[in-house]
Structures are given as C-alpha cells and as structure tokens.
Amino acid sequence: MPLRHAIATAALVRDGRLLLGHRHPQRRYYADCWDLIGGHIEPGESPREAVRRECLEEIGVRVKNPRPIDLAFSDPDIDMHAFLVTEWIGEPTNLAPDEHDDLGWFSPGQIPGLVLADAAAVPDLLRAVRSASGS
Image (cartoon, rainbow, N blue to C red; front, side, top):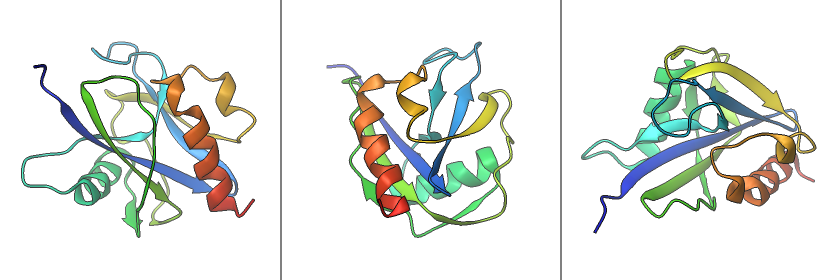
C-alpha cells in the first residue's frame, strides 16, 4: 500500500479573492502550477497546527481561526486537510521562493482558468471564496 501524505492547506480569502502560490517549476511534485499555501503535517502536529505553521513559514502571516473545509483532491496518496482563513496578522509575502515563485490574489472568475495542482478542487475553492465573501 502506498504511503499517504498528510497535507494541510489554507484558502486565504480577502475582498472576495483567493490567495494562491505558484509552485516553482523546479519542484519535484506539482511543478509550475497554482496551489493553496500549505504543506506536510509533521509527526505529532494537528492539521490546524500545521496550517498555522506553514502560513507563517511560507508567507509570514499568523493565521487566526482556520475553519475546516471540504477540498476535493484526486491524488489517492494525499490525505488533504484544507482550511478557510479569513483572518490573519501580517501581509502575505513570499518567504519560500524555492517553493513558490509567485503569489497572486484571484477572483472566482479567474480560478477556473488557472493551471492548478488539482483541477478537482475548483468547485470547492469557488464555494470557499463565495462563503467567505457572503455571496
């Protein structure tokens, strides 16, 4: 049985737009595509703790009140834990240029046209943005 990778990701939403990181083209997995901020859950760490740590390490923000959301992901080796984040301290900045070569804020209308790590996530991402925006 293949090893499953536990991943925690954050859907940061501000002003009706979703923050995504563009995965560096030299990445081993899911290279040259847009993805949520996040990463592997470390041993002894909860998914919520992991998403807070990853956001601090990768974009320099202190996440407040991450709320679990459903996020479809078609890779059977990934155990995905996604969180909607609408409150944080700090301004997102790319602190991990070896992981992401760019950050971008995207409206719901732009998301379906992006090359994402997994297109199966699009409906859930759109639902998260609309939920955070109250529409």
